[in-house]
Length: 354
Ligand code: PA5
Image 1 (cartoon, rainbow, N blue to C red):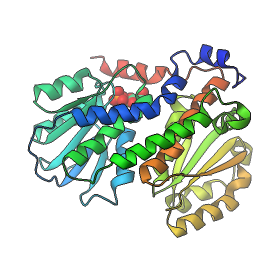
Image 2: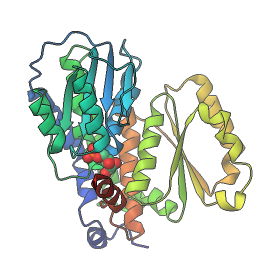
Image 3: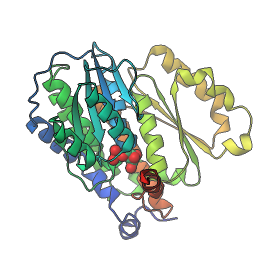
Image 4: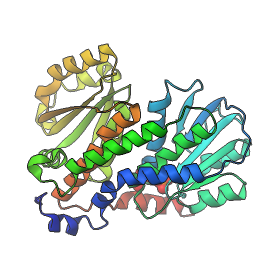
């Protein structure tokens, strides 16, 4: 196992510098806001009947986060489309946001084309690729973000512009203060999670060490922590290259809770991670505690953490940022480069063949 305080060894394994990208994440959010505010949305737009965000994987999760944050604020439905096809309710009165870091993801391109053929207004957020070309050919706006990162390391570029677009179109109140406070907290958290902070004071490194050889199971709630649980699961898959699973309270109490009854010889390699938020429904808070007492003996370990901060954005990112570091350190501890996702690239290549 690689020593997580050995900066030289870390740099050798983290060849594409995922940790460096993580350290610059607060500044990425600031830059993303500037890019989005500068982009002109020249089309006069009447209030949409629904908002549909198109995107997959590391790009699509920006839609999930927006939905988790805005579902109690918006008075129109918001839907995250992770498919080639659009739902039947989509029409020219829907506002579409097509989010693809590469701009070349076939499901997103297919859904984008369908939205354009409906005569709908589509705003694209991308570093380029086919999406940027197609959008420009259709005279639709593009927010061009810098390329060169893994999509999952570009979450600030992919997410923050969505808030700015919705704000510019008058659909939500200004997020300026929430973004600023979130960036300030991220900068503080960075000090404690960065490679330069030693293991005995670094929660991300400690958790990564505990997770070596384990299968993470991440639980959040249908408030805001569910989406953070999804992000942790995906980051364990893509950065650490391990299987990982997630689920959401209260739904998981109606099925999965029973599944932790048999196969103890297998589940004792599972590591349960639970997120709690002060604003969780009171019954959800009770459910989390009862569930933990029912199932914890079936796991190798249980780790619980609370969100921190005021706004939903700040609270979600207090957890997501920790998970991004944990999954990257876990890769490094195992001697695995966190950046490449060869199977995703291979799949895309195979699918693109005639
Ligand atoms: O993290 C990844 O590399 C993937 O999950 C991608 O984000 C996903 O395949 C979609 O690609 P893109 O973000 O370029 O649209």
